[in-house]
Image (cartoon, rainbow, N blue to C red):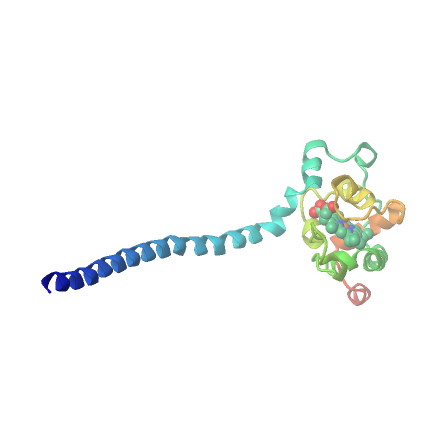
Amino acid sequence: MLSCTLRHHRLPVTAAAAMLLALTMTSRSMAGEGLRPSLQCCAPQAAQAQDVPSGASATARHRAFLRDGVPIEYRNRISPYPAVVKVIRAGGVLYREHCATCHGLAGRGDGAAGSAIVPPPAFLSYTVKRARAGDEYMLWTISEGGLPFGTDMPAFKDILTKRQIWQIVEYMRAGFPSAEQVDGE
Ligand code: HEC
């Protein structure tokens, strides 16, 4: 009887100890996990914050440009155009026809055809403000496209003339104005 009581006693004690242990372990692992979600929620945010500005500089094109500059045929090429209304208007027409499907009307990389593309179409309104986006870089990139780097950016050298490419470049540098904005000016 006594041993039975003891045994009964012992059982709850053991069970309580087990529960305590389990609780300690749970709270420890919860504390451990408590760290992880906060890391998980910060990491993508940090990456996102950098993605538009410096994620772009991680692409093969940017690395190649930093290392070698542009291919010889594009070296020291300069836009023959001043950023006058006529040029910007012509560039806008060409941009909307050839580029906006992927890069979006305002150059935010959000064109309908661009959503499934990896890497995604560049955020051009940002690109054009970068120091590297000088004349030779823009002419090279738009002429040759992404073929050398395995991206979906098309090559336009057989589709557009150099002059047309320069007009698009001036249009983008003017801040992607709509046709109404250009004509209103
Ligand atoms: C089929 C979709 C598509 C079309 C159409 C397209 N692009 Fe792109 N473009 C891309 C993608 C994807 C990238 C990013 C990969 C890369 O840099 O090659 C890109 C990158 C670029 C870059 C390089 C940006 C940087 O930060 O270096 C420029 C400049 C550019 N495009 C201009 C244009 C212009 C101008 C047109 C129209 C004449 C155009 N693109 C049409 C998909 C497209």
